[in-house]
Image 1 (cartoon, rainbow, N blue to C red):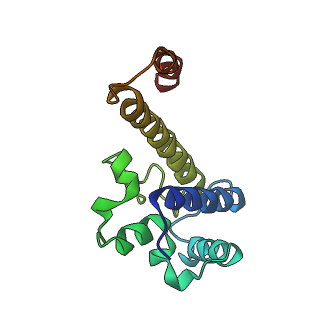
Image 2: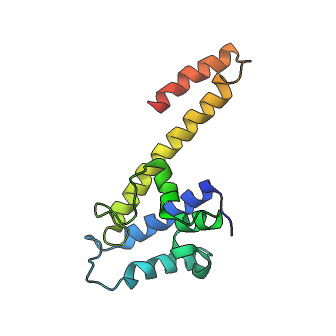
Length: 147
């Protein structure tokens, strides 16, 4: 199944929100079997109609880049927002700290959405030479959303 980038973000956030809610308060330790987080991902995928075997690494970001011929962590959708993003970063590692990982995904998504909104405003109102006064008022109203 080829998901759009927006769908990829949507499902990724939904999955990690669910996993974060069910994770132990302190997350998982590296001493625990790795299967605990992988089982949580697999269970979420099954419960939500996905075949875990068909999702690369049971990760929507990994699956997105592999389906579009860019199978490398350097092409991760998270890195498009923050070039330093790494799902294994000790500060928010997806395995040891799923709650922090979900919070990081939410943070990145908020940045992504602001950027998308700004790009929409630029394309619709600034590049379009046929702006009306109403359009200019919309630009003024929208600028507060970006800042």
